[in-house]
Image (cartoon, rainbow, N blue to C red):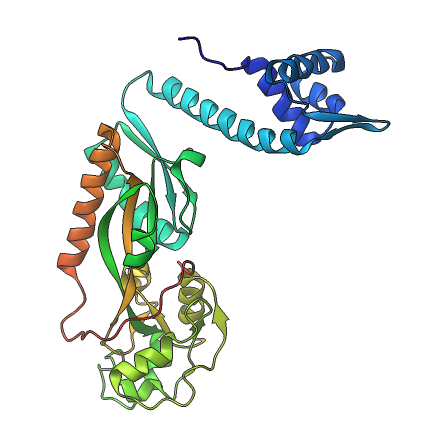
Length: 330
């Protein structure tokens, strides 16, 4: 059956003209004449039976239908170009994944592990874009998503299947110098974690998407902390990590997002008692059989998550109540 699709040349001319709302600028970008662009768009409008531009004394203006169609065409052409480049780069072999991901988790946990994926599956290429909220896969070019959310949020995401990777446990961390001021200790014990009560007198770094995080942590530890809501607020875990490394205060951060800082000693665990949040990290994909490249990536990702869980927190870390959920801050 013949597909009812306009020519790609007409769509390309329309996308550029819609982006600039100018036939002249579209002609300049495409190295065509203005009349050639006009003919392509006129042919497209006749094909669709819909007016895409309204002509004015000063040029052209998109109609509401044209503005909506322009956004769709831009996305389609971008996906077509990406897939074409992928095929050209791999000569028809291997596979690519377009992944939507929460930013800090992608930057600090996933990307440092991608060299291991490349060793096991050199034919898999992963493209990553930032996305923090649920979306409809049919409206995007994403193959899967790395999402941080609550079980209810995942359950209410229509048309998807979810693979639990790991829970989000937060632990108080700070710079070694700040920890040294928290409580007097003997020689060689300067970086040993302190009791929860000692943190109540230290400056606290707040996360704006979890405004009651410190209060919930102190409540879970049975500590009275009058200043639990005080302190500068930052949106992302990555911002909290930078502020904490510079000695600005103590931050509640999942250890999996600050592995490099903990390994280098820029950050140390201030109190070895984590709190389990309601949120967890999931691999989300459309509710259908996964293509081979996505299935291979999912198996590798689950293995990495299990490896991290088997290493786990250091001995002596205790659990606690859940933090409130929020769709951002990662």
